[in-house]
Length: 377
Ligand SMILES: Cc1cc2nc3c(=O)[nH]c(=O)nc-3n(C[C@H](O)[C@H](O)[C@H](O)COP(=O)(O)OP(=O)(O)OC[C@H]3O[C@@H](n4cnc5c(N)ncnc54)[C@H](O)[C@@H]3O)c2cc1C
Figure (cartoon, rainbow, N blue to C red):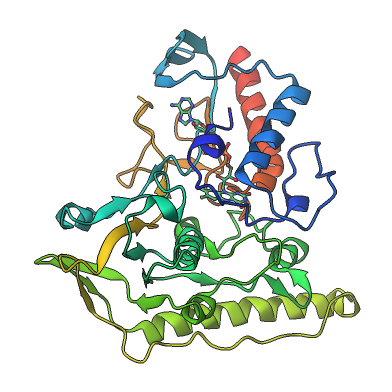
């Protein structure tokens, strides 16, 4: 239970969602620091406490090795025996494996490669330069921490979502919540495929509530380069056009902040918050390097912060598409009696977040209950 939070997070990780948002069904946050951000250990405690009060018959330390459709339901094989059931809810998470691009195969053996699952703290990396690939929540957090340890850091930046930690005196996630952005439903989202693939925002949860954008990293001495496009003769080749990538992220942030301003005005909330703010554009490096010779010794390790994906190798039902994603409609998987929870924009924009589960679960379970009563008839 809470396996991913026990074993798959780096040591310093804190949630990027504030404590008041770390609520589980029927359990609002009741601690002393609603605006703080939980450590991974505190998330484990939250889940353990929830398991205890919910009194659900939980079996821990059990691996599901196969689920297959049989007459009237599913046959489940686990590391501790077999089960038959009429319905299955897949809540195995959206982030079971780090995504590592295939260019990693050609990286010289002298360069150590780590994923966020192997990374614990900067001291465990070899001395010397570090190339962090990916500038979403994981990449910016690890680049910042590794740079603070004194190592030279190069950060390879592709498409990203820039956000300030606070806006008009409130946590940016307060704005997402209050203005209804989080609650936007999957059937109202304009481009659902894109929304489901959106990278995580550049945010970190620190007691100081600091913003961690590319300007912060540049000021800390992190060198920015473009998206890693190819590997040739041991040299990493990066895309040019950082200016465009940065202005797109700046523009999207400005637009989002503009919608928050409109919401505040329309709902009479202007007096509860500070005046509108605008942020400096992302600074473009004067001449970003377009390649980096990985055999030269400048870079001693690479951290792949290139995202995560689910792992359905245990699912023997043909419901996984060519990209490895589950085929489902709002959590009702393409096989009767099979359901999913906790996937990106499953039913709402907040679906993969801890606070997102309650509304989704209620609706998915209602569907499941209807299915069970229909098959019982
Ligand atoms: C680096 C990182 C940072 C994050 N930060 C935040 C944050 O700040 N705030 C937030 O709200 N969310 C955050 N998330 C998202 C977070 O993962 C979810 O909010 C939450 O953990 C989702 O819970 P879940 O139960 O759906 O999935 P998970 O927490 O992934 O749990 C799935 C569980 O299923 C188990 N499992 C998988 N396959 C099998 C199998 N075959 N048999 C048995 N068990 C299996 C896994 O071991 C795991 O214990 C973050 C995610 C990552 C990767």
